[in-house]
Image (cartoon, rainbow, N blue to C red; front, top):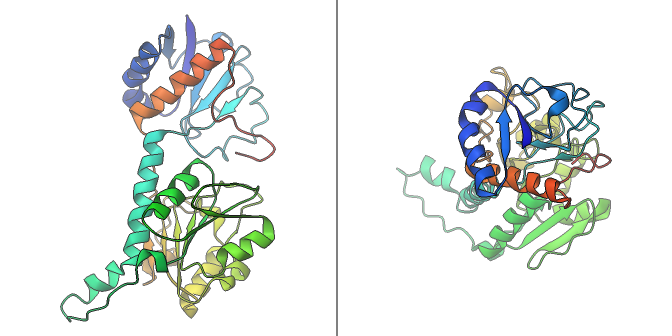
Length: 308
């Protein structure tokens, strides 16, 4: 029997226990899933960074730590975590992110906020077609690629940027420092879907924000540290950036005194762009355990050097 430790918050256990067991059963796995296994007997750990587990060293037989979160920045530097670490790439989470991003891109594209604000003034204003609205997606991992492809299908000319070269049909792909300059030039809407690493911190700063056309709009469902907050606020105040929709922040919940709350050109959402979905994430976890038992490569294995 495969011994699996569930190391997340108590409310997660209540939500996930039965769907996880169903996922294991459907995958033909004989799993003993608990929150209280003896650490040295555990084969796999299902993990969330906000749970109680901080020291992995007692898990001497553990074959892999399987995260319930897409982001691993809170655990990737843990020196006691010496076994393979897999992040969550959940089809349900991906679908949720695609829907959220597409909705907010269309909200900006169609100028829905202005239409609502002036609905009693009868001020007709016809938006351009999607083909006339360049969009740039920073980050072409699983989530970024899915969002970029959906926006391209909607007719937007989409440029994607990544640290390393990528080829995606229908997307103009850029990479590296020069590619970032090209990706930002002309982008009327920018979507941030990069991981949180030292290399991506403050990716949008005073210099990069200045490369955008005046009046560009920012959407950040990725990670809070991707944006230099002071630089973004200055760009919003000057009109260089017309509006920002922000779902993630350096400190969460966003402190009540933060300027983002009161800024007329900022929309704050409470980290809801994408959430791990119980049933589909259980299927991903089950598949990775099946792979581990079969000696096959794990899905979504984290590169410790890159940090994701």
